[in-house]
Image 1 (cartoon, rainbow, N blue to C red):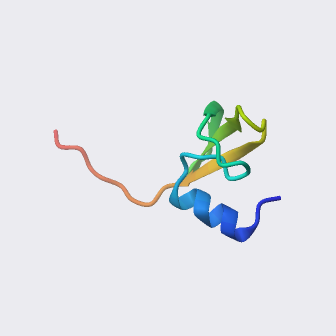
Image 2: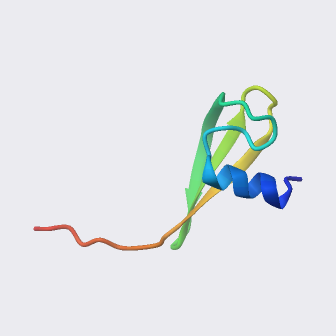
Length: 64
């Protein structure tokens, strides 16, 4: 289980594994509901997996 610090550090810099620090990551799938999108992430180096969770924070209307 990740510590609060590991989670916080990863959210600030999501380009390296929160477990081992490797940058060898891959997206293995995604899912969504009305307010969130989840990306399944895997570290190729240490083989740990987790979900990045994205939450809707704003809306921007497109010009027609």
